[in-house]
Length: 257
Image (cartoon, helix red, strand yellow):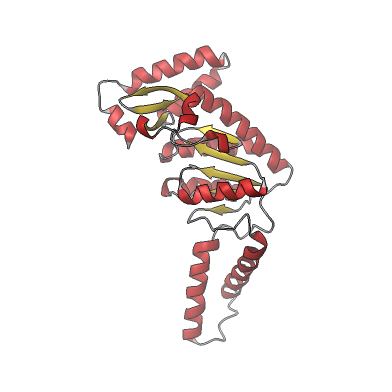
C-alpha cells in the first residue's frame, strides 16, 4: 500500500501527524474531543490517500499535503464531513428510511455488515446487482423467491423431494445467496445509498442508479474519487481496514445517538 512506502522513508509519520494535529488545532478551534478524534484518525491511517498521480482534480480541496508522492488527506475536513454525514444518516433512521449499505471490497465486509445489521438495514458485500435501484420492481420478485425458498429449506419443506432434487434446490439457493444475501429485509425501494469507495466499478454503477432515481448518496471517498457526485462525502483512506472500521464505527455512534 502507498502509506507503507511513506512510512519507510525519511519523513516520519510522527512528524507529519504533528503537522496535521497543529492544523487541526488552528482550524477546528473546538474541543479536545475533536483533537483526540484527529489523533485517532492518524493512528489508523485515515489520512493516507493514493499516489498523487491518481488524484482526482475535484478532490484537491480535501488534500492537506503530499509526501513522497502520496496524498495526505485533510483530517479537519474529514471530521467536519463525517459529522454532516452522521447527522444526515441519524435523521434518516429517525424517519424510518431505508439505507442500502454497499462495500464489495474484503477490507470493508465485516464492518459494513455489522453496521447494516445493527440498524436492520440491507447491505451488499459481494457484488452490486444491476438494476437494484432502477429496476427494483422486477428484482423484488426474485428477491422474494429467494427468501421464500431459503425459508422453506430451513423449515424442512423440501424433505419430501429426492436427494438429487434437494441438491439442485440447495445449489440454486447458494447462487441466489451470492446475489441477494444481505438484502433479505429490502422490502421497498431504497431511500439512501451508502458506499465505501466510489471508485470501484460496481459501486459506480450503484451511484449512477442512485442519481437516476434521485436518492441521496453517502460515501467514504479517497483521493482518486470525485466528491461532486456524492451528496455527503467523507474524505478518508477507503482502502485500509483500520481506517474504514474507524469511520464506520463513528457513523454507527452518530446514528445511534
